[in-house]
Structure formats: structure tokens, C-alpha cells
Length: 402
Image (cartoon, rainbow, N blue to C red):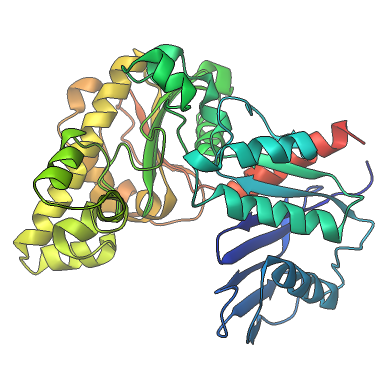
């Protein structure tokens, strides 16, 4: 295959994030974002990385088709148009692939139909992902369109980890099980951590902590996920920026029966008004740490609850794996918040876990170890790169199908 470029699209309900990469050297040629699609105040921000200045256009962009046409125009202005023979494929982030999609998949009518059937378990994400795919197909019907699923990396979980302990027939009828999310990040980071240790992924057991506004943990044995913290939806698991994470299910019944809240109100409460923002009014870890430094007890409590839940998952996944070679921190908080990394592993020295204060304080864009030499388990900070992971999987699959 002579064409080496891959366009990566991440279509949200009112936005499109994109990157154009050249897989011959894994370099980025352009990045950009279209936001507020469907509004009068739509904005496209485009950054060419081959020379030239960042550009921005504002004004109404009616729908995703108009958004992608605008993206194509910006790329063409840099000599990187979608009609280029150098474009090998378009890779799409798709949030929910259910049990069916266990790997990146070339899109056809059957694939589109299955993604559509999964909308009830991903009502906020899959419709927008579908719109992005169909729009790209219309623009380049001759080009492979590849769906890369957030859930795919987690399909290797054994049934003992994926099943909820509810009636099996009911669960199967309504597709209720633990799917997990952030899969492209967990795949990339677990593999990059093995590389940092100078080993093959098959030789390494890693606990990956993807800590951003959304947060998830995974236990990865020999390159395969065996457990992860998010479940049927991204609500389960760790304390997040606005999501509650783990919760006694009876809280929902209590809020409905005693509090008089509707299902939609409870949904909004747990997804948008809980987590750190529910505990202290802020979901930015930098602001929370600033408030703690000023003696704010509400911020301190929110931080402590966040760390307590995180530490519980580290311990649980240590037990699941039996042997842990590394713990890897990634995403916005994981990569940048040294106090979070220090607090999460404090007191776990008996498990072979420790953080070197000086190494932990260093900031950087490259994967690095922050554990002392003597630590039995390595602790790493590994910047995630979901777009590169999507491009890598897309290019590999497009090459097989050409």
C-alpha cells in the first residue's frame, strides 16, 4: 500500500475532533476541532503541522456533513485534501461496540446496523459516531472507513469479570454486562509501558490508570485486559470529574421514592453533578489542589474520597493479576497531577509500590519511570495517544484489505 496517510475522526453530538497522520513515520500533519455544530456560533480551529499558522473560522455550521466539508477545505488549503491519493483510510472512534466488535473493523452496512442496534446502551455517543461515519462515507465512498471501538480492548475480560450478578436471561435480553471504555487508551498505554520496561506486552502485567475528567482503571495481563472499572456505561468505577463512579444501586431507588426525583433527574445527577464537582463544586484537579493549599476542607475531602476509591482499585487489580510489573498513570490528571500519583500509592510499600519524589515532580511529554530503583513494581507516567492508536489500528487493517 503506497498511501500512508490516515484521517482520524472523533465525532461527538455537536463536535468533530480530527487529526491527519502519516503512518510512514507516525507524524501528525494537521489537527483540529469543530465545535458547537448546529449553532450560529459554530467554530472550526485548524492547526497545520507542516508549516503555516493556526486558523480559525466562526459562524453557523449546520450539521456534521457541513463540518466535515469545512474540515476538508482546511486540509486542502494545506495541500492535504481528502481527495489526495496519499490518504489510505479514515479511522473513526466509536464508543460502544458491545460484545460483537472485538477488534477494529472495516465499515459496511452490517457494521453500521450493529452500531445502530447498540444505541440503547450508548445513547449519547453511538448516534454521533454513526453520523460521522456516514458523512465520511459520502465524501469518500471509495476509501476504507474503519471503526475503532472504545470497548474492544476490554472484550478479553473473562465472564467472571464481565457479568453482573443479576438474572442471566434478563441481562442477556437487554445486553446488560460490563463493557468498559477508554479501551484505545488502555491498549496504547499498556503496550507503551511494556516498551518502557524493555519487554514485550505478553511478558508484562500492568495496572493502567486513565485519569482525566472521565477516569477508569484496567488490569492488563500479558497484553490482554482481564478487568476494568467502567461497566455497562462510563458511570461505574472511579470517582470522576462529574460522575459518581461506584454507588449502591439502592441509592437510585431511594432518590426516586423518597426524594421524588425522576429517572432523568437521577441520570443527570449521577453523570453531570456528582464526582468531584458534586463533592466540592470543582472538577479541575488543579483548582482543587489550589484550594487545598489554601486550607479548604471541602476540597480536601473531595480529594481524599477520589484517592480512596483509586487506591481501592489499585489493590483490587493487584489481587486480580497476582503479579504486577508496573502501574501506569495516564490522561490529563494522571500525566500532570504529581500529588494524585503520590497519594494513590502512599502506604503501598508492602506491595512493592513506591514513588520517588524528585522523579514524580518532573514534567514531560515522554513515557518515564517515577519509582525508585529499589521498587519491586515500576511506576510509570505514560502520556496517552488515542489518535495514534486509532490511526495505527486503522492503517494496519486498511493495508490488509487493499
